[in-house]
Length: 216
Image 1 (cartoon, rainbow, N blue to C red):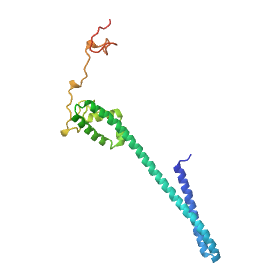
Image 2: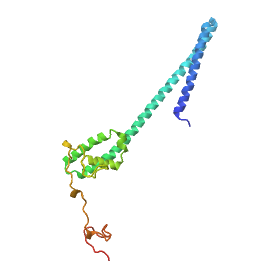
Image 3: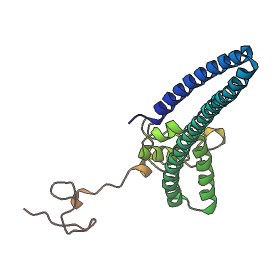
Image 4: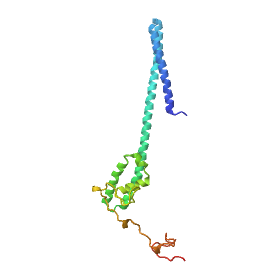
């Protein structure tokens, strides 16, 4: 099946040929009528009137088809824009929900919560100005990066060394929160007497923190 655009193009080409032929015949008929005898001129004038009416209708039909094609193009473009906007809003909502969940987890007071949310809203507005780049970044990596930039206690995103400072969180280029020391960021280690014989995990059925005897 031919696309509608191809069909419309073929119809317009046919109508153009019909218009040109009708116009040429009408002009020739008008010249013949002017040179004819009075009795013959009346008959040719009536024929000219009918033929010229068909020419006008052909021209009006071409114009209507052109306007409909233009309107269809605008509607298609508007639909593409709406689809892009809905996709962007959906991605933005996912990122916002995830980061705000991290904010709620870390904020210790209403003031801290509001400060984090304000920074995040401003950052998200900037990020979404470039929709293609915003949507092209992996979602998990994007969430981690934005959370890190506003100062949440999350691992730094890829490409940033551990201990690096988020940019632009407070005046003077300093972070809005103190940087945790190496000891604070290190996870607690299990002591040797709490490890299984393979030194990887407690034996099945035992609780961490309770000593047990290894089987010989």
